Length: 336
Image (cartoon, rainbow, N blue to C red; front, side, top):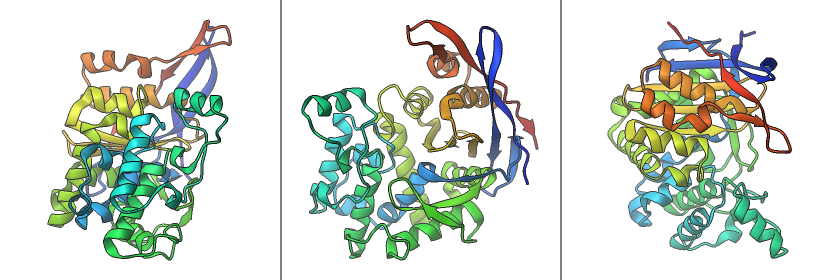
């Protein structure tokens, strides 16, 4: 069993209507917990929070050079993108460079997160395609890895595929010092991994401070982090939380969220990993929680918190557009 704590409340009319519980862990690259709110063993599936790790086989194997991938293209490989035109163009470019087209993507379609793209498809009477999936960048990167290593592209989703076995080993090394993690199937069809908030914090601690990793892997981690921090819109989308965090904080951090209330931050300026799990899976309180955590750590000062106010202090609106409530963070980090 584990203990979760209140991380944020939703208020309406000045009274609490909903409480989001969970855990926040701040850890170094060796998994030593520096600060926490709630239980570090609170479980979660890593989901899209592990996309920077899933890109490592491509980058450390020389795929960026072989396929002449740009910084924005590497960023979209690590993305949960909104299917804005800039994202779709990057995915098409990656696929073209490796001699494939969007028909090779096995991620399945869903309605684009970008309202303009979704509206344009609807006006044209077109259904979303696999390239519109927020995971199509990751899948294009996985296909590039298959081309790089000479592995089959048709079966790249399967847990027994050489790429997925390589990724499972990497994630076990970053999260659990090599111990295999239980697997399930992610929303886009690839394997995902069951871990704890503390293990996710350790993984992002190693992404923040890769100095102890073997040379090629440390260089690959830095290259991924540099691409994500330099091209934040490619990692998420215009105005979205992860984008705003990286735009405001610059190369001091890079970050990646996952479905069902998980989020990881590589705080490069401090060599620390930050991990959050909102237990009920509702990510609407993630902005207030993350900005408050960065403030308590001294990583975000008054200027940064003000620049992030749209995420730190979101309003609850009714169908008329009236402000009827707010989300307020309760998280209190305690030094371990």
